[in-house]
Length: 186
Image (cartoon, rainbow, N blue to C red):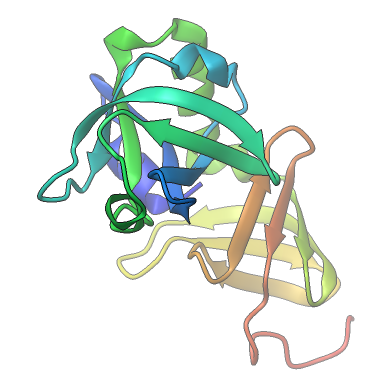
């Protein structure tokens, strides 16, 4: 989940994922989808890249396949590694009218900030950090408040910290930046 997903979600459009990076020579991209809902239904659907580039905005999902814990996606108007590389960290937005209602509902449920309350938080460098007790929306970055063995921690919801959101198992996978935790567990 990212701040971008909530910003673009409206009554007419919903953000279905974020392009993480280019992959391969033919314009494929690795995408973190906002939902685990039946992704094959997106193939053939219109999708917009936001913010748009000078060349790429409206596309069609040509293919979606699982790849290394994420998804490898081919967009109709992206044909080279150069075009794909420019799309890194941009959102993929679909018109609500183009999607089955169960996909729209799943995306809206999972991109709601309160949907992570009570999630377990696991760090790649500190292990179990506790549970999300609050979600804060600030001018700089959104943050999650975590109650656990290190007391109360506040972590920003940014790419450098938030590795993955596992909605199925209700776990946030994070990387704790140096200096955030100064003591041993309580």
